[in-house]
Length: 426
Ligand SMILES: *Cc1c(COP(=O)(O)O)cnc(C)c1O
Image (cartoon, rainbow, N blue to C red; front, top):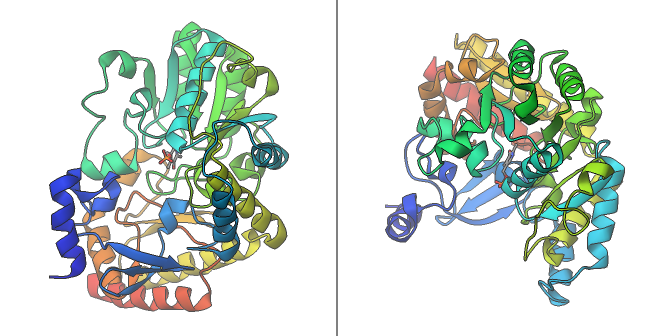
């Protein structure tokens, strides 16, 4: 019995499934999760003293790897001056200014503590502004676990085979229309049938919770036109893509500016800090200026904000993106080559540094196709890699997350382990 196995047993007695977020539990791949003792750069060290190259990076929150000195330092210094005030601070203004400067669609921004809160609040704002009840989302896109957004929501749920969740009322679910990603005609038809009831459309502009699925050419532009034509709010959930595909997120990359944007993960530097923002006239519907209520005791928390500012400083001074893209390409190409050599059908979808591995002939352009890939083979691959000290995301519906701390040697190690694993799986 390893210490991780012991801790799993103890954890399951007091925490449902032994984890505080379901994907951590390895249910999609089997086995027991590794309990982490510490992280440094590209590596995790578990409680049994084993080291792993970490391709999860807190599910994309760590653009500069674990325990990056500048970020830790900023958080420690902030904590010494007080960990929460319930009153405004200068650092919040500076972080908001930086986000506004970086993200094209954001004139004003409100800080929150999680991506769930950001998406939930953006949807409330869209409803409050338009006075309409319904939200269009896409199957396989995840926007956090708030009631109305949990319908057919990708990775976590997909791994468990749950269509939605008990506890979500019919009322909440019926205000959510779930359509097919990359199917613009479906959205057009929905607007033609229900124009007066649709408050907005929310999506991941590059989907990354059904594995990585980029938008097909014209999809984002088409959504923008439809929303403009029908008086609906276009919401980009850039909780993963924001500050990962580039400082301006997917919207800068594709040149499509949404009305509202959700941010999280990278911008918090590994701390609970997220945001939603958008056009000034829309954001000014929020209390205390307008009537749409939204609040948080720990919103704009000084420790998290200090970490967020430190990350944005690093992004500005280091411009990590060109190297991240190059490394991701090397990794994805190397993986593809190993699987092809072993005669294993594989489709690797990649957008900039964001990619995922589908064991399928492809193409994979929506959730149905993502689901049809061989997830049992992914589970075997996952464990073969884990045994070699490579910690992949424990589900084929998740992206692989590169950080600036992953260098040539981590990529080399990963490719060598993958070549061995592929040969054995083939
Ligand atoms: C992770 C994620 C969320 C939820 O963020 P939490 O901080 O886990 O609440 C929302 N949207 C997307 C696209 C995400 O990847």
